[in-house]
Length: 168
Image 1 (tube, one colour):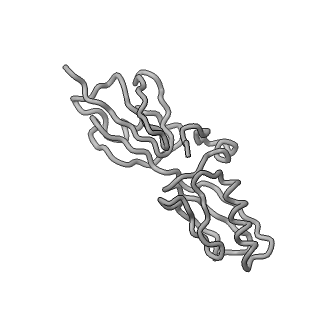
Image 2 (cartoon, helix red, strand yellow):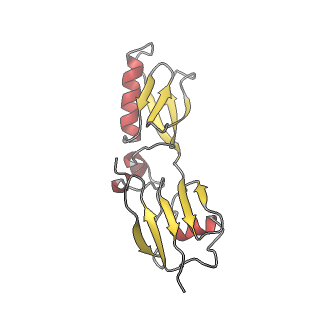
Image 3 (cartoon, helix red, strand yellow):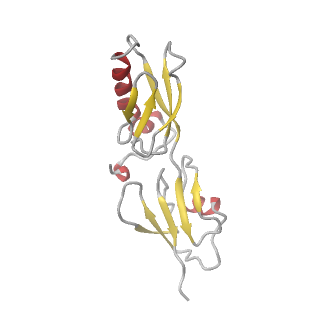
């Protein structure tokens, strides 16, 4: 799965529909007339969600609309007749920041996040930080890319941000 090729999430529903689900994303499932199945589920590290009466359904690498069809199909094979399913994203997977920031770690993703916003969430730069560039590895990508910090670089769910040390 190459999450870097996906449309970044935004507040519009069309972008949310093209967002590719991955591990640690939380979905909100509504199955009309079935309150025991309706609820929030997390995509596991293996890329699946476990839905009552439907079993383990592959979610990673799919959109919410594709997941709706998979869940409806699985439920139709069981007890539920003509299942009407709605899936939406309840919470995006976190992003990670490390290096020369005061509090490196895992942080919750929010819409419109930039690298400088992420640095601010992590307590700002340390005195050793190189404040001119950032290394960014998109979720699913195998290599880091270098970006200048004077441009508004967007952050997406699952990204790894590394602030390098400056050399005197």
